[in-house]
Each structure stands twice: as structure tokens, then as C-alpha cells.
Length: 419
Image 1: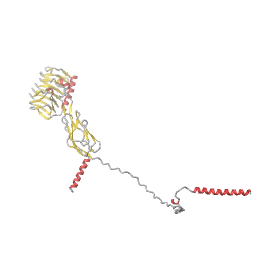
Image 2: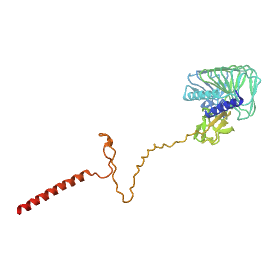
Image 3: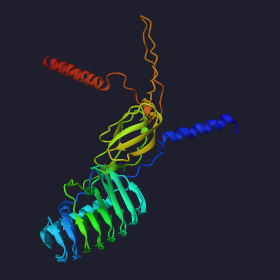
Image 4: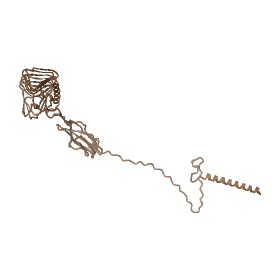
């Protein structure tokens, strides 16, 4: 095939695709993230140094600063020899029940957060900046350093267990506070003997503190027991109450915008999820000429003026990283061609040919020409109606003549009889 013909076919194909409104998505929306602006809100559970669901059992001279409570079960055992400083006991009362409800809420919020690092296991030897860290079985068999400011927050997510080995230690540097360290544990937590642990443990099942473990934080068990043995538990004071209102980064939820047509009204609403409500912007490329984006509502509208493809990147943001982006190619088809309207002309009526009329010269006697004989019974055997009807006047005239003749005869007879 000749090159010019190949080029013609390719050009035709591209025009067909353009007129069909081809849309291309070249980038998928970013994965949404759930973040917490501040520490996890513990609600009324923040006043408890130890909170169990089934039982709280102590062995040895444990010292607990803060309330000690149980809800679900009723047993709080081992006090004394254990003592409570600056708190009271709550056994299956309204305060313990409310604290357990607030603990469940806080646990779920901590579990919902998006980690900055996943796949953790052994934490010894690490120095971690503020953030959310997750793993399956988290363990600490050495030293862990948490470096940050007074506002810094750390959340650790253990899908199953948390185990702190004997003599393990967590060290806070800078102005970092134990108020803002949280451990969300999918099953049970165990703190080894003589370990020095920092933070609030929120275990779905049980918590065991082995002999001599020292905790600057709280031991809160959602469904199981808390077991103590000669431990010192110091619930942090002066902490920010925290909030469980999370922010969710945006995700684009609408489909790609449909094609447009030159000269035709166009409207498409881009939608996105996220908390707080996101805003929309075109960050690269441009919309088709004649269209505009409402950044608050995500509505793309207007009347396109130019045919062809337009590639642009739609970015959705709400202050919570990462932003969501998607790149589209929106094709504007040419305006539809409207065929001209052909006026309807009625059929022409054929003209009747004029009959020539002979004009007689002045003084000439005009003798009517005899009409040609027509077959009897035919439609043409009757004379055409060319003037007034003469039959009735002629009959009347004939009757008058006869009547006049009779009058004359009668008068003569009368005159003769008189003579």
C-alpha cells in the first residue's frame, strides 16, 4: 500500500478515537493513610494504673500509682501486700465499666493508624523518631531509644504478642514523654523481670508483669487478666487528654471524567473521601479550553471551545499526607454537523392554455360558428355554460305571443256581435 494511503488510514483512525472521547488514566490514586494529630485519647481509662477485664492479681509488695480496677470480673486480689498510691479500687462498678469502654475505643483507634514502618520484630538497638510502627510479634531484648520532643507521639502495633526480656530498657531522650507512648497488642503482653518499660500497654487479652518489672505507664487489659509480681507502676500525670478523632488522607472515588463535545454544555463532579473534607486542583497540564474546576466541590464544567485531547493531573488534598492524584486525558469531540433543512415546495399546478378569441373588424356581421357535433351521451354533447340560460325566457316569450293572439281574436268577435 502506498505511504500516503497508510498515513490517511492512520489519521482517520486517530480522528475516530478522538471523536469517541478516549479517556486514559495514567496514574492511580495514592493509598489513603489514617493519622492521629496528638496522643491517643484514653478517656476515663487514663486515671487507671492497672485495669483488667476478668481479674487483677498481685503477688509481693507492688506499688501502683493511679486507680486499680476490673470490669467484667470482680476479683482484685493481693492488696495488701500490694499498695495503691493516689488512686482507689474500682471493682465491677460504673467507673470501671466506663474505663473499659473507653479502653476499647482507644485500642481500635491505635489499631487503625497507618504505620510509617512495618514488619518490625526485635526492637533492641533501635532509636526511633515519632511515628506509628507495626509488626507481628514485637520483642525487646535490649535497649530501645525514643528520641523526640514533648509533643512527640509513638504508637506500636503488635499483631500478636509483645515481649520485653529480662533487664530490657526503654530510654526517652530530649523532652519525650511517657504520656505519649502507646502499645496496641493483638493478644497478650509479658514484661520480663527487672525490665524498665515505658508507655501505656493496651492488650486485647492479658498482661503479665514478672518479678521486679518497672513500668512508667499503664497496664490495661481489654478482655483478660492483669497479673503483677512485686512491680512498680507509675501512671504518668499531667498528660494531654488526647483525642481519638483521626484524620484520613484523601482517596479519589469517582470514575474518570467522560468525553466532551465542542459547543455543548459539560459538567462532571469529581469525588474523594477523606477527613477533613478534601479540596481539588489541577497541578499539571490543563483542562480543555472552556472548562473550569471548582476546587471546593470538584465540579468540572463549562462549554468546550476546541476539539482535541487535553491531559491534566487532578490532585486532591486535605492536609493529611499523602495527597491523591490521578492523570486523565479528556478528549473533546468536534461539534456535531447539522444537515441543512431543504424547504418543501408544493407541486406546480399546470397552467390552462388560453383559448384564442377572434375579434371581428368594425361593421362586420358576426355569425356564430356551429359547434362541432359530439357523440350523443358523451360529456361533451352538452353546450358549455358560456353565459345566461336562454331556455326559460324564450318559452315565456312564446306563451305571451299565444296569449296576445287569443286576446285579439276574442275582441274581434265581441265587436262583430255588436254590429
